[in-house]
Image (cartoon, rainbow, N blue to C red; front, side):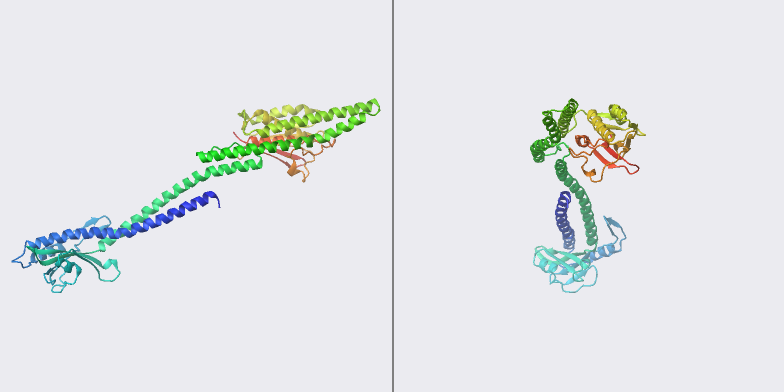
Length: 477
C-alpha cells in the first residue's frame, strides 16, 4: 500500500469517526430542541388562557363557558397553514380546566369531564404552586402517540381556585424533526464529499514531494542523470539537499573507482601489444619486420589515446546533471548532419547510406553536438558490421509523442548472448572480416546522451531481414 493511500485512509477514518459522532449527536439533539420550543409556546398559551378565565370568575367560581364557545368555533374553522414541511389544517390543542380539588370541569375533547386529575403532574404541581407539566404516551415507547401538557394556575386574588392545562400532540413536531434530521444527514453527506476532496488534495500535497524524492532516488540508483527535485517546505527542501549531497559524495567515489578500473581494463591489451613489440625490437630482424612492429606500436598507442579521449568524454557526460546549451532542433536536419559526417567512411567502405525523413516535420530539444555525436556513433557502429556493397538506412519517425532515429544495417546481427551487454563500457564484438574490436565505449556514450535528453537507446536484431536495428528515442519538442 502506497504512502498516499495510507495517509488518505487514516485521514478518512478519522473524519468518518468524527463525522459519525458529530452527526449522531446532532440527530439526537434535534427532537429535544423542538420539544423544548413547543413546551415554551405551551407555557405562554396556558398562562394567557388562565388569565382569561380569571377575568370571568363569578364570585370565585369558575365559568369556562366562554372558553368552550371559543374552542367550538376554532375546531370548526377551515384553514391551511404551511409550516416549512408541515401542512396544518386543524387545531390540535387540547385544553382542560380543573377545580381546586383537581376534578375536571371542562375538557375541549368532552371526554374526561368529572374525572379526578389531581394525581397528574401538571395539575398536582400547579395546585401546589409549582410549575406543572407532563408528557404522556397512549402507547408506551411510541413517540407518535406522545402529548405534552403545560398547566397554569387560575387565581382568585392569592388563592388558587383551579388549573388550566394546555396539551398538544407531538405528531406535527415529529414531522418537522424527521425533515430536520433528513437535512442534517444530507448536509453531513455533502460536507463529507467536500472533505473527501480536501483529503485527496491534502494527501496529494503531502505525498507528491515524497514521491518525487523517491523517483529521484531511484534515478540515482539506476545511474540516470536527473536534477534534484524542487520541493516545498524547509524540511523537505533540506531532505532533497541531503540526498543531492549524498549522491555527489557517492558518485565521486564510485566515479573515480569506476574510471580507474575502466582505464586499466581498456589500456591493458594495447600496452601488452606495445610491450611485446618493444621487446622484439631489441632483437636483430629484417627492416621490413622492424617497420611492421613499429607500426603496431603506433597503432596501439593511437588506440590508447582514443580510449582515453572516449573515457574523458564519457566521464564528462556522466558528471552532468542537466543539459547546458538546449535548443529546439529540426530532427531531419540533425539526421542529415550526422550522415554527412560519416559519408566519407561509408564511401570508402563501399556501403550505401540512405536517410529517410519523417512524413511530418519533427523537432526535438537538446544539445546539437551531443545528439549529432550519438547518431554518428550509431552510424559508425552499423558501418563496422556492414558487408561491402551493403546498405545502412537512417529512418526518422514519430511515435507516441517521441521522435525515433532508427538505424538498420544488413550485417550479421548481434548474437543473443551479447544483446544485454552491448551498452556496457568496453564490451565490443569482433568486426566481420578483420576480427578487430572497437574501444567498446561508443554505445555507452550513446546511452548517456539519450538519458541526458530524457530518452532511451536500444539495439536489437531485425525481424524482417538479417542485420541489427539501433533506435535512439527522444521526447518530441
